[in-house]
Length: 145
Image (tube, rainbow, N blue to C red):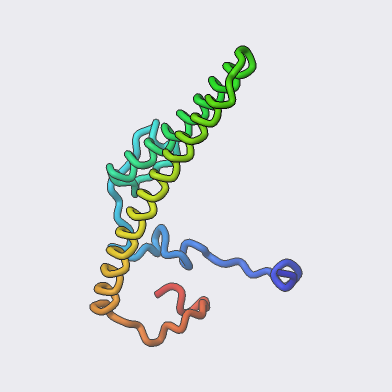
């Protein structure tokens, strides 16, 4: 880090390094929507989001918001009413059960998707053309290719 901070600074074109803009490689990214709707853009959804991605994204916001509302309502109720210990025990049992079940389902979903994508990546690697000159080192001469 010290060498980076105190060493000689070199300007570098990151669009060139990351293959963006005029240096973009055809077929490397998949654009689903040319321009995302204004509301989706506010939530941080880009043009790469598929319909399924948008659904998952919105459901995550709803899930978090619903538990926030439950917390606020529970706090207000607890401050204004006497709540029995058995009621809290029931709440936490239900809360944890829901989260454990949802977490296990998401883990299984990610495992299935991850293995599917791993097989897809291996098929692509078996059939892709190799550039044996590419050793991973970035120089001004090789990064434009």
